[in-house]
Length: 268
Length: 328
Image (cartoon, rainbow over all chains, first blue to last red; front, side, top):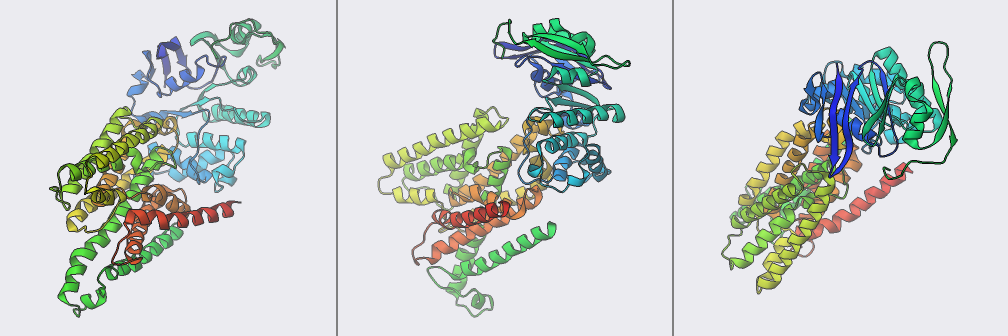
């Protein structure tokens, strides 16, 4: 399975949100997309998920334009979790997760392996014991894992997430990121996620794509991308980068040393 | 859960049966339906029962079910608890068409066939115009705003037509605008039944798409639903249901707005039971309103559209109160 963007350009009116983006995504790794607010990283993710039509260029999966894939077939390959999903009132957690089964179920029948897939998704996210609880009675961290379980129930090969750690405290942020890493390493789920926090991206992504003003400005493994010059360029703050890695892997960690911004505002 | 839903459905059916007997009995002339059924009634009673009360009974049920279902679909698709079939413009479109036709034709319009036809045409035209104005996709925010504004404009035109051309026949137009089942017969019943029947056949296919449309567009689409197809399709279904009901009974307010909430309080969030309980509740509420409207001050009738609000609002507030107490 291949997911690629080539010459991807997206305009809202006359404003270009994405400019000539070309990226190939590894269906087995974890890719973190980072960039300042308004840089176009969420729009990039939505284009990758086939949710907005590019003005120029294309996103394609397995050689076929993503907008040409029938929704049902696409959803068995690619799942997407928006930044602030809204749950209808009155659903239990299990009800919610079951909605992820639509593309396998058809309109009437309950597909073979349906219940098993729902159980498995709940188990993967550690929510089995909470399955019967009302979704809106769950904590923020549990809800986010619930949304991930709904996406997992699609049994797609790749999962795209838009800032999956927003609204969560630091404990639950790490919990969600650890869950995603486990899903990637153990179950082979390919992950592309927009992340707010450079350090999270550095710690959990195999590859970081930095976006600024709608264009790719850096792309590579964390220790190559997360360097003081890039941080200065992206966010306009001076920072030191220390290595918290082991002998097996480098792991850059950003410490901001000066809050003075010396880039122009205006893309927020 | 399904046992609970079955119990709710059964209770509603019993309520409807009880109301049906009242509906056949009460009215300007008192008729004993059991006497007629057992052959002891006089021919006049048989006439009243067969040609007036029976079609009116079924019309109340069908109109209520259709309005309720239309409201449920609109609320789900537009993800807006305040949405009602009127948002699709059908009530305002039908009203303008009927009022204009009634007043401009100088009474030449046949009330039994002409009015429903004109109303249906107006409803469909207004609904199509609103869908088209909002880009055909049924984008919820544009549709709600566009629908409300367009509806206001049409209603302003209705008033303008009444003021300008109403001389002497304004009451006729106003009675239609309130929503009434007075004087309706089989001619008006069949189209409403047909629309309701087609909807009942199609709705099972809509259960899962409606379930997904409750989430945002992005999530529904990435879960595999072709939103561009299913959302307009669901809205068209709601439009047909509401248009048929409006054409027979006029714009009966309230049922399409409140009955879906009422059903949700009874059944919970699952779509399939919600559909059937909404249809039964809409039928029951409308029939109850019709019976009450006829029973309060016979031989005068209070139009059903005026009564739905009067009896429905207290029931709804009571349920809401109970619900919030249970949550607290």
